Amino acid sequence: MKKFFGHILIFLATIAPYDAMAQIITVSGPIEPEEMGLPLIHEHIMVDWIGADSTGHHRWDRNEIVERALPYLEEVKEYGVTTFLDCTPAYLGRDPYVLKELADRTGIHILTNTGYYGSGNNKFIPEGVMNAPAKQMASHWIKEFKHGIEGSGIRPGFIKISVENEENLSETHKNLVRAAGLTHLETGMAIVSHTGGDSPAMAQISLLKEMGVSPSAFVWTHAQNGTIPGYLQAAGQGAWISLDNIDGGTPNEPDGTGNIDWFVKTLLELKDGGILDHILISHDAGWYTVGEKNGGSYRGYTDLFTKLIPQLEQNGFTQKEIDMLLRQNPKKAYTIHIREE
Ligand SMILES: [Zn+2]
Image (cartoon, rainbow, N blue to C red; front, side, top):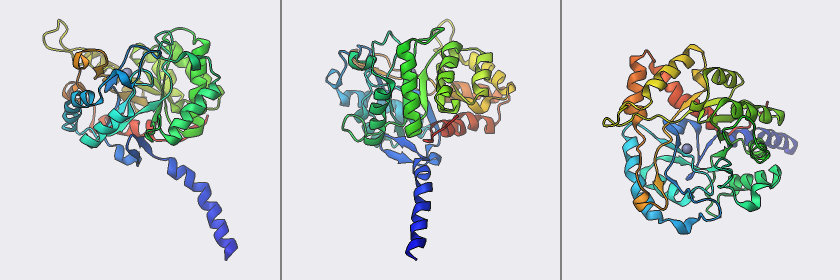
């Protein structure tokens, strides 16, 4: 009998880690992937552009930021949004306490991230860690995943890195990608990388593959700067294409429609190309800018619902296809699971 239970325990120990990992990690703790519902996959609550050498919690008033952002989160609830991925990295204004307060007040599931942001000439990476070995960087990010950010107990739900939008990756940025790969293999968090064009996207995908990380763990962020052949090539390998600058414009601007026409045309081409199941869309909007009076101008997160979706419907997109873009794809991309090549 004792032996029998022993076998059961070994069996449970083998399956338990996967089950425990098949979750979305929010600032309020893990949720089941099904609970993610309708997410906005790339937005911001706040940003501090001053740089890693000067930023810190002393630069902002948490209550002022919460009060400023709150109405915009309340507004998206009216469109059914249930989850919000905050893409502001460490040293650029990532504040888990602000996000937790907003999650508590609105009931929206909010995700934060771990990682370093390399573009902007590495201005947002502290000197002391910039040239650290990938393994050392990764161990810090993994520690945040396991134990929470800066003693808050609040855990990141994805990895956010950033590389320069250039033909070749610098050594520092290759190192960031390797650190992200190591962190993924240990934690199963998706790698969201501020990238831009085709070349740096392909370079990161190959680096990750060399490490045994599947491209399906990689979100090519700001892919609107890439090309259709690039999207087909990356998605063909399993990567996620993040078209994340939806902007409906304002009526009194000369081009009052923003980029909605571009989105419709591109999404139609991607549908024809058969890769709609690898596309993620969002606004990259917000945010409270630290150092500006009451955070400066703040762009809301609703153009997707008020301007883009009606156009997609008019252009023949079915409810099923819209659900795939808005619900199924994000759930697959951001559910914690290790994706090996
Ligand atoms: Zn962003």
